[in-house]
Structures are given as C-alpha cells and as structure tokens.
Image (tube, rainbow, N blue to C red; front, side, top):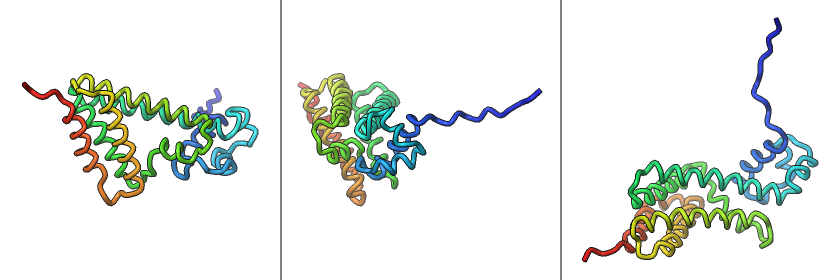
Amino acid sequence: MTTSANPAAKPGPRERLLLAAQQLTYTYGVGVGVDALLKEAGVARRSLYEHFGGKDGLIAEVLRRSTSEDEADYRATLAAAGDDPRARLLAVVDRLGRIASAPDFHGCRYLAADLALTDPAHPGHEVTRAYRRTVHGLFADEFRALGHTRPEFAADQLLILVDGLLAAGATRPDIRPEAASRELAEHIIDSGLPQPS
C-alpha cells in the first residue's frame, strides 16, 4: 500500500494576488507597482488581467475583501460588549484605539486609498463609500437603541472621530490617540441622551 502526504493545497493565482495585494497595499499604499505585486504573489502578469482585468480591479477587490473582514470585526466587537448600546459603542472606540496604538499600524487602508486614488471613477471609491455607509449604519443603530436625540448626526460624528483616531495613530502615535478618542466618544454619546425631567 502506498501512502502519500496530503499537504495543504497551495492557493491559486487569484488568491495569491489578493493576499499579496492586501499586504503590500496596506504596507506601501495602493500606489505599489504591478511588478512588486506579481513578484510577491509569484504569478504571471496574465493572471492579473484574467482574474481582475488589471490593477484597478485588483485594488477594488482587495478593498472589498478588507471591508468584509473589518465589518465582521465591528460586529464581533459590538456583540462581545453585551447589550448596553453605550458600552458597545465605547468598545468599538477602545478596540480601534488598541489597533491604532500597535507598533505595526500603518493607518486606515480606506482613507489612504481614497486619498491616493485620484480618479473619482476608480472602482475602489465605491467600495470605501459602501463600507463607510455600513459602519455609519452600525453606529446609528446603537445610538437609536440608546435613545440618542440625533442618532444619524451622532453616527456622523463618531465616524469622523474614528477617521481621526486612525489617522492620528499612523501619523502622531506620540499623542496617545486612544485616550483622547475615548473621551471624545463619551462626549458624543452622552451629549445627545434625553435629560431626566
């Protein structure tokens, strides 16, 4: 009887391109060259065009994959914080503060992509806009559950705070953005709560 090891199958060219692009674009930005992407993935140029139609399609798909992962992380963080909407919102801010304080943090890939992709018609922009709409919706739902007087506006404020937290984490880590963000988030949450009569 012959036995053979069954090693884990090596990912195909499409998956290798996605993995390489997800890592390289986070580390170096969406301006990373096609040759670097192909080399890291170990695939031929033809694979890029067959699977994604070119670099723009690859970038949009990487952003789509990342947003899916990050949306799941938001939902898991909210769920792990229990049932109190205030605690759930603050848990998100605390989690993002820890992420932004990590030594290998390079900033928000979505802000970076939106700033670097100067063509307003680039397909990546719709991915980042859809992601922000989803996160805004998650925040607004929590503010509504809390009885906040302006849930949509408060969600706008918290999303701006998140963008600032992530930008500061990448550019000004010495200011401890997580502590400042927590206090600002508490103000946004508490300022719109109904006042006892």
